[in-house]
Image (cartoon, rainbow, N blue to C red):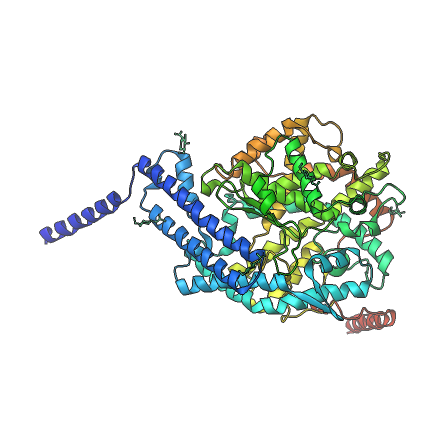
Amino acid sequence: MARASFLVVFFLVALCNSRAQALITDEEQARQWLDQYNSLAEHYYSLAEEANWAYETNINPQNQQAQVQASLNRDKFKKEAYDNSTQFDVNSFTNETVKRLFNKMKNIGNAGLSDQTKLNRLTRLLADMKQVYSTGKVPDGDRELVFEPDLTNELANSRDYDRLQFIWKGWRDAVGPTLRDMYKEYVTLKNEAIGELGYNDVGDYWRSWYETPTFEDDLEALWQEVRPMYLELHAYVRRRLGEFYGKDKIDENDPIPAHLLGNMWSQQWNNIYDLVEPFSGKQRIDVTSAMVNKGWDALRMFNESEQFFTSLGLIPMTPDFWRDSMIVRPEGREVVCYASAWDFYNRRDFRIKMCTEVTQDDLQTVHHEMGHIEYFLQYKDQPVPFRDGANPGFHEAVGDCLALSVSTPKHLKEIGLIDGVLQEDDEADINYLMKQALEKIAFLPFAYMMDQWRWKVFDGRITPDNMNQEWWKLRQQYQGIVPPVKRDENDFDPGCKFHIPADVPYIRYFVSFIVQFQFYEAMCDASGHTGPLYKCDFYRSPEAGQLLGDMLKLGSSRPWPEAMEAITGRRAMSAAPLVRYFEPLTTWLRQNNTDSGTKTGWTRFEPWTSSAPKMTGSAMATALICVLCCLFSRLMI
Ligand SMILES: *[C@@H]1O[C@H](CO)[C@@H](O)[C@H](O)[C@H]1NC(C)=O
Ligand SMILES: *[C@@H]1O[C@H](CO)[C@@H](O)[C@H](O)[C@H]1NC(C)=O
Ligand SMILES: *[C@@H]1O[C@H](CO)[C@@H](O)[C@H](O)[C@H]1NC(C)=O
Ligand SMILES: *[C@@H]1O[C@H](CO)[C@@H](O)[C@H](O)[C@H]1NC(C)=O
Ligand SMILES: *[C@@H]1O[C@H](CO)[C@@H](O)[C@H](O)[C@H]1NC(C)=O
């Protein structure tokens, strides 16, 4: 007996030892392996990006097939590299950078799916969903309207209630129902893939990129900080829209019908600035018409944007960028128009794909996308796992931060988009801040609710048979908007927003819209700006550029609070700079709403009954009598 148990113990100890010895503790060997990994990663990643580019700029079955194949090859490489990386005893290493590289390597996403048939299916599904979205068209008499520019332009410019409703519904009919079943299958497969990496669900995985245990609570705290500003803006805009479209269409206690805000998803409202301008007769910062009148085209917009980056001493775009980017919608082939910036992981090739129109919105977007390219350029010599934003929100914030400077009247005058003498008084300032708020404040609840919805879909709190209803509950709760026509579960309105079928997380934009004001304030300070924050233009300030560049170079090599500290001197996200920026407007809005007896907020009601007729006066009277009768009868008994 004793001998037998001795043998068992002996074998167990031997087994443990052989296990432990199997893990490589030699850090030098690990470094070499990482170098090799890096070259291979550049190879597979750039092939996948090439094929993806060919597909997204020229949608056809042949290119889709090639794209799917290249993406599968990359995924196979990722999985294999990850499996190989587990032969190292990472915990025994002393170098933090080496450890972080190994830990980043775990983020292999869909490639985690070990069932090859399922991975093939998921990859194909992703391509198909993008295609449905990108080729969706709305029949209109003998024409077919495409999303960009037809639908976006009409939503921005039409002031015809019924026409807007037609466009709004038309787009949702064009792509929603087709995407609905595809999306359900995607959720199942993607959850399975991510589950194999050890995460609870896809939302859990996406949130892990922020390396913040309190991430959800932090976001909620930020939202609570900015929500009062949103409520004032919402109430003011609702009243002005009611004055324009009629109080029968927009009740002062209700959420706003979603098709009247100048944007397909009511996410930014700057296109209806003319309807809500606080002080008419002041100089209007209408740069779109100035751009058109001065003969600007897409190339001019891109040039102008690059000029701003280089004025700060940042890195210019590369020759390949100018040769290979797609900056206008091409003729004769279908493309994914949704603007995007591309890193081909070969340290040479960076491109933007965009169907640019000559508008102020798109000038903004050009800066946004070029901000991504600037980030790519700054961190291109980092190892592949670190070629990423400090967190995804940082990546989105770079171009927007510069655009805050570009959109100041002072700067627009400097680049010839405002003629004559600048009006600089309190009323002109309020007008300007209103325009900015329609873009920045209006966006916050949308950016917050998008992934509230998706996180719930991924973790099962929203089930496949109530996806649309729950979507509208959140839209109402956060944004205070309702669908203008009845929706049901055959519709799939979330799918009508690019990032959902395209599998791109969204909370990054909420984070971006907070932190971009932190970056902006820090860069303004560095440039020596004094006076109100919203007047700051750090054009041609190498000090501001240096501060930004130092942060961008880090890529994701350090946890984001360190990147935040590099630029702002503080480690936390904070809404304070954003609140400061808008302070004069917030005060004005509060005063105006109070003085005009405008209440903030909205009474809640089920979205499914939103198109039901309003209670008329007589119906109301009848209801009141019933209630009174009821009360009476109770009292009498
Ligand atoms: C689009 O793709 C097809 C098929 O791969 C190819 O023959 C054609 O040349 C491409 N067109 C352009 C403009 O790249
Ligand atoms: C993983 O290790 C195997 C066996 O050593 C090797 O053949 C393969 O090339 C490695 N793959 C990667 C991506 O590192
Ligand atoms: C850790 O490793 C990185 C990457 O190999 C290297 O650049 C760095 O100098 C090392 N740090 C220390 C403290 O040795
Ligand atoms: C509120 O602002 C609007 C737009 O500037 C203006 O017409 C209105 O008179 C203001 N109302 C009050 C009560 O100040
Ligand atoms: C863009 O900039 C380049 C170089 O600065 C210049 O040669 C070109 O004419 C510019 N194009 C436009 C349309 O402004």
